[in-house]
Image 1 (tube, rainbow over the protein chains, first blue to last red):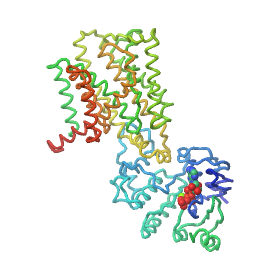
Image 2 (image 1 turned 90 degrees about the vertical axis):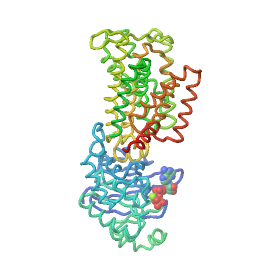
Image 3 (image 1 turned 30 degrees about the vertical axis):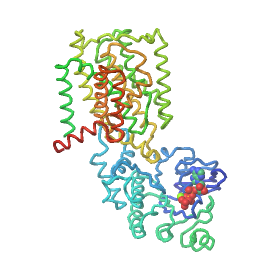
Image 4 (image 1 turned 90 degrees about the horizontal axis):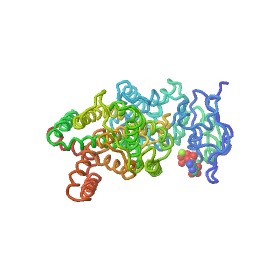
Length: 247
Length: 312
Ligand SMILES: Nc1ncnc2c1ncn2[C@@H]1O[C@H](COP(=O)(O)OP(=O)(O)OP(=O)(O)O)[C@@H](O)[C@H]1O
Ligand SMILES: [Mg+2]
């Protein structure tokens, strides 16, 4: 058995009495595609926040490839190889889409560069590849703040990809994206991630997508993982069906 | 292209007009000096941060200049400008390390608080600073030559304009570089910036240091042009003036603050001849006009007029 890329041990966090993480233990294996499902408010986003240092746990540990990242900041964790997209897209709204992505490229290649423009041919070329990957060529020069919601979600994924992470955490990547475009997105995204050797964790409400693209599913409820396993098995479980899929 | 023509015409006028109207020489130098300090304020405004204390760095440049000329054997203009700029930059770096942890009103007020402390020190440390009387600033030498004051004043204007072009170009490059774009990103989405592995603290500290150095350069020029430095340079109302000039001129680029400063200086000199407070009124009304009608400041207005006049 290979070492997990991400290991979470006995994680607890409380928000004024709400147990958003209640003894969470998760291993994410290199190369796998892990889906997280669960009702609203069950702690899925909190889990991603804990893994990226945005929220600090009351107790417990997070390890990236064996090294503790529990107390690190989002910035340091990003540098170590975890990128994420957000449930509510986090973009630089006053810049065009391509500028957003170029800024991500520059952040990876060296932000401390003050005499050459951000908008330079090699950054632009690389940015355009990421934009193509999420199928947003037509929005390249549009202001990020003026894009429709689904498009902003995809842009948010593209900007996360610019870091070339080893682990990518996606928070409901397809919410706001039309049902028809969801599959198209996943059809390009998943092979691209596989090609780049990126391990992916995605929070998802669409069970068809989970069945089709996840190798393993974690079911969340009230800050706990209540079931885990391959989609075919987990999504047959009557308790899961009632608690999660039914909601 | 239009911008370059505009800048060239502006520079030509700045060189030629004082030959016909001598008092403009001083006004133009002061406009460049205040413009540098206001450009420093603009850098921070682009990150969405207002400093109501930036005159402190203008004052530090001015006092370093006075100190060098009075206490050390250094009299060379070039060296003085360099030391004053770097000294203020270093001062900004040290203050900035603490300051850029804060945002919004805290940042504005902390800057103001520091400036008031410095103002009080300048006024109280009599033996070092000359107290409220300030310090006289002798005329520097230029490449070893002791110049007649009128010749020196013309030269100082040309040097100020040359610095405006050179430093302005560097700042322009900075603003379009990755680090300059990251500076704006602190304003629009600091969370995303941190998630890209970029330290907002570092990005801001860089800008803060540069902005202090710019203000210091302006302070040195002003000190030499006026021939005297006083604690009021660091007073918070002067900081407010710099913010005003920045907004008036426009924060979209490098040229704006200099146009704002020129407008400000001219109104001050011309209106002072009529009645006290007239210039306050004119500047106040201009600011209202800018806030309501010119989101890109006076520079935006100039651009718009030129576009209408002769294509792009
Ligand atoms: N920063 C916070 N401060 C206070 N409470 C929080 C915070 N973050 C999350 N919570 C609470 O923790 C619980 C879990 O929230 P979380 O956002 O993790 O749920 P989720 O599973 O992502 O839900 P959704 O499907 O709606 O996105 C909720 O009750 C939420 O209100
Ligand atoms: Mg959520």
